[in-house]
Every structure is written in structure tokens, then in C-alpha cells.
Length: 116
Length: 116
Image 1 (cartoon, rainbow over the protein chains, first blue to last red):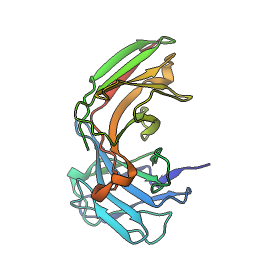
Image 2: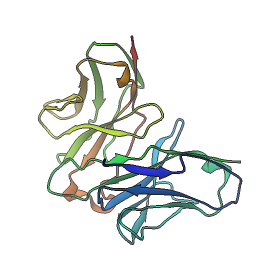
Image 3: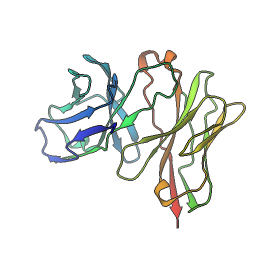
Image 4: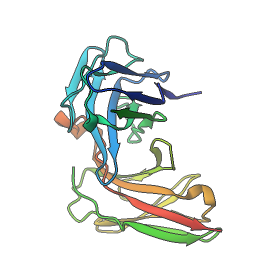
């Protein structure tokens, strides 16, 4: 089954304790991205990656790092989490332009992070 | 990407049609109109997209105004499972992605409630 998986689904941590949220897709997609979703602010993009070793900042990158060493994985790293990073996080993937206009983006189930 | 405007919320009765409007008066000639929805506690999922002509798929229909300044997502028979936030998003043609790489920019969407 084509899917995007994220782990963990729920995480409670304390300020300053480094954490990584993993994201993996099995569709051989080149493009992957991370979003955060907050009440009243909607979904905002954190980082995206066009392919292996190619990453770029989205709209709200401060406090986050990403890496793309393999095509299927795109982990989100919080080196020193703070309470304002408490949020619901979604990973997504899609193929690069293939000659059709569909360009559908697939989202993971989400990771709910609480930073105390 | 150009801006879209949607009502904050709408209500429908089960098994009745639902018409979800979206205004996009600043749409450019190469913008595709995409709809995604987010069911409670899930990541967004693709619903439908179009450019100029009306489109149908197994989930919904998309009616696009002749001047393309507005569009309507049509759910022909709403079910309780259709209760979700529906997002109308404009995306440039993949060949015109440029630096943004065609990132999805989510607005606040329309929260659809379905009454039994």
C-alpha cells in the first residue's frame, strides 16, 4: 500500500532535549516536505526536499533541521525543542513533475508533539 | 501562489448534495485549482483538481467558472464521513514551479459539518 509513515505519532518531551521525528514513504517520490499545524494558523511548511541531499526552507524553518540522505526518508530534527514548537506535524511526499498535472501530494498521519 | 477565499464553515444534511465555494479572483492562466480535505485527526488528502473544464472523480466534482475566478467543489451525496475541513489551493503548472517548487499553501479552509 502506498503510504507515508511517521514516528512517533505522539511525543511529550521537555525543553532542550533533542528529538527526531522520522518520515518514510514507499512511493519512490523525489519531493518530501514537513508541515506544522496550529489552531488558527493552519498548515505551514517547515522544510522541503526536492531530492536526496537537496533541502530548502519553507515558511517557518526556525528551530528545525532536516536531512535527506536516502530518497525514502526525511527526518525532522529539533535540536533544542521549545514550548512554542508544540504542534501537530505532518510529513508529505509527491513525485516531481511527470508530464501530468495531477502532482498529488500524500500526507502522513501526523505526529503530535508537546514540549514542556 | 494566488490567494483563495472560502467560507469558514458550512453545514449539510446526510445524503444531500453539498456545494463548497472558493473564490480566486487573482488566479493566473497557468494556475491549477486543487482541493484537499482533512478528516479529523488525519493528514490532508487529495480530492480533485482542474484547470478550466469541470472535472469528476469518484470522490467529487469540480465546477470551474468560465472566467476561472471561482470554483465549486460538489459532493453529490454527503455522508458522515465527509465531515472535514476542505481546502481550495491554487498551484502553478509544474513547469512554472520556480523556486517554490510548487509547494502547497494551505488557507484556513471550510469546515464541513454533516448532520444525520
